[in-house]
Length: 321
Image (cartoon, rainbow, N blue to C red):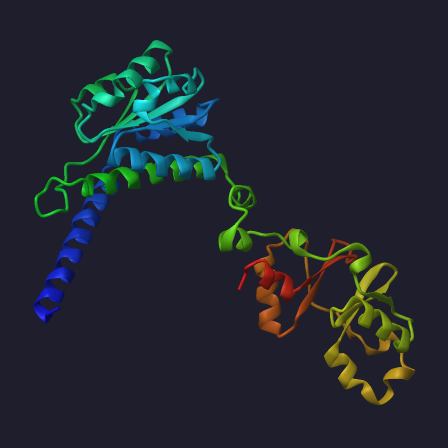
């Protein structure tokens, strides 16, 4: 490939991105008039948010539906052609529909429009034409700004689909924030992958119960070493009156090696150890371990009672690295 060909490809990519970016910015500066009422209608919906569209609009509708579903708003995509052959039964009173058609004249949406009108199901329409049939039938009209398609022939859906997708994201995020959707709720719908791992709580990954390497402050070190060896964490928590008062690590053993076997656990332990709460994010615990070059943290309750132990290997196995 010649330098001129490479330059031409880069210029095309830049033109497409600028064209679509400018269109999205223009929409941000002038949101469709019905945007806020549409968000309020979604929040008031007792059933599901049903999205539908055909072709490129259908692909975008599927993605928007997925975003709603993963952020606390029950949602589903219904293919308009399948809807005309029985799937209209999936759209029920109590639902809300979001129908997408850039032209607003998509024939495949006709039966869906008639169905929602018959059962008084609220309809949000997203279209590039304010005077289209779809817009006239809608309860909430989200008109896309007029902007050129990014392709050289000006016909392939590019800018219009980007605008639709961005507007759908804006609807979903605005709804999510109005609901007060929390990170732990988000993890419920994203249990797999790195994202799910980053939202894991310490309590979900920590060891607890009999697995905890706990020793009394007055326990002789020979016995404490047996506990450390049996539990295999390379650490022991020192407790007094049920409270965690110190931690014995490999470093503590090395620092006290000369008289180790003549001392008690409380004499060897590092006092006021770093701890974490069970409800904290595991990612926060891993950051504490990394910053302090330690491999494990005890999780404690409000009274400093040890309730768990999180090892850095637990975080790595969960995909936090």
